[in-house]
Length: 259
Image (cartoon, rainbow, N blue to C red; front, side):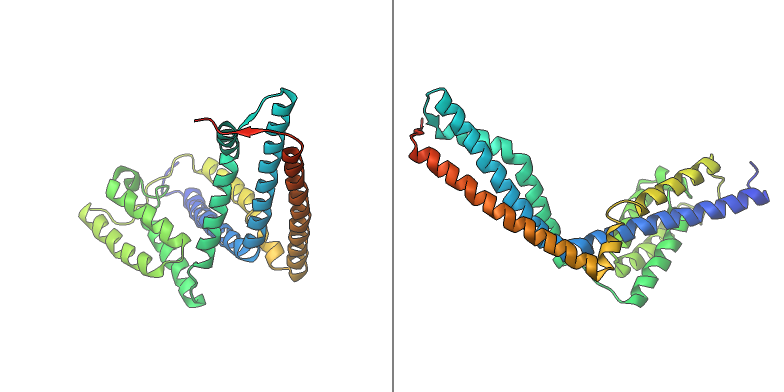
């Protein structure tokens, strides 16, 4: 397709619009996730922690019961090593949740005017060096690094970083002898279709869909009440499992430490 054809120019404009739309809804999804964690993170983390404790106790019970059935002592070192290995993935997930909670509590907020400036500046930068619009970005490690930094700054609403990057990008482009590229984009119709599907996928799934809970006070309260109820139920279950472990010990299960 000729780059000067009217239909191609229209398709290129549509493609650029969808690129910016895709990046914007990705950013919105990140923001909804951060808001969701800020609102419900402590409750969901507490619920997960208690669930982990219950799983761990169930594994201890199963381990002890198997030893009793075989008439052998429970080697504490072996049992602890086994339980730690079994619980490793759960504990990593818990650590990740705790880190997410901390990041959201210390998250950066900006004014509405700065938010608009972030969008405007990112759009300007993307027109210059978005890899799908300027092939030189993939060929130049320096431009590639600047693009990664620009995406990160955009996602974190860092206006100051974007302003600095915009100056750096212009400098690199001049040194490379190129301004904003308007090269023909191959398979543009297919890429437009793919972007449309990607945008639909983002906006119809979590975390983007969290917006409907966060914007509805009734749903927010309902979810908090449900999380609190689950926490209470699991606390009772945790206590029951602790009693079973105690009864196993009192009932004759024998432990030993082996060096």
